[in-house]
Image (cartoon, rainbow, N blue to C red; front, side, top):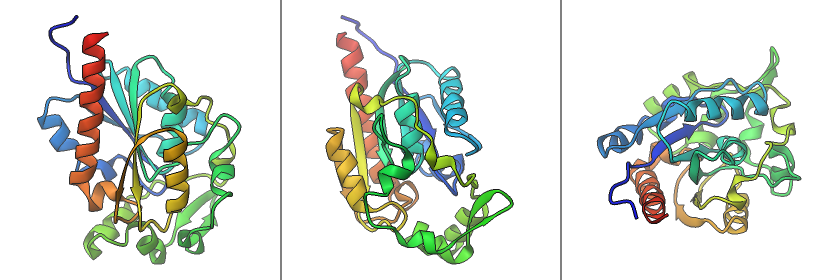
Length: 236
């Protein structure tokens, strides 16, 4: 038995209309507790490229690592999480497709959410219109909502049509945060995938961006995941 064990690293994976800055309220606390932390910044051009970027980010921190995926970032960690360096997965209002699913087909089994009434396809990208920010981050202050909109990372239209290349939640311990007031990913879909993967599940009254509106809850879930992973590694 190992007497000491370095705390797991944390790799954050953003979704659509967001970048790594969406985790700005949770990263400092985890760093202060001794975790190596990095946010993978990918281009939302292809799922394969996004998964590859996350695997590259794993090379910049020590193992074992926990992947934290928000929204489409859940699809990304489902693919990248099969990497041997990954010991656990945390999903925040996230997609989590099975091997025979894509991000699109998974969502098609549930009611369409409000945000899709406020998007525009232009110049080869799907843009979130200013009027759509309330569907995405409705429980933030007006100033924060403007910042989230201004820093959106914009996907290509067919991003959701590719399989992710792995199903990490079938072999790695998982935690899931359900955003009960989500108007971007349907809460019923979130509950379905959380139950299917056997995740330790936390439900909160939050918009889609729980890590910004309820950072303390998100930190606690990640902290619990990290402790569980660390204890498992210590006795291995």
